[in-house]
Length: 151
Image (cartoon, rainbow, N blue to C red; front, side, top):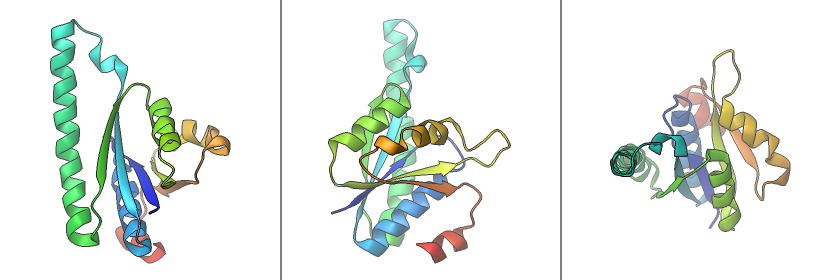
């Protein structure tokens, strides 16, 4: 089964990337993997404090995931899986893609502000020539109706 890998983060454009991945998976009989990466700088504290912060970050990610997962299951009939990694986001995403040969498309949401599409889209675009799958960049301000019409 072909899987769509989509990144869960705290950006607004993440929502459109999630919608796109779920809709494409539903229309093509595919699956969705949602990856969330906890950057290492969040834990630059004493060991005990770092462990508490790590647990809180995981809880926050799992709560966010459940919102998207429920929508995907209820509305699209897609049961996504969650992968949580710790480290540099680009390196971790590239590792997830390289380890799972069923990942057919990496889906990212592009930011809409004047500074560009966002650091993740910029960095992943630079690596797109060596990715083992296509990269789909979904505009962050694309309407729900337009997303539905193109998927």
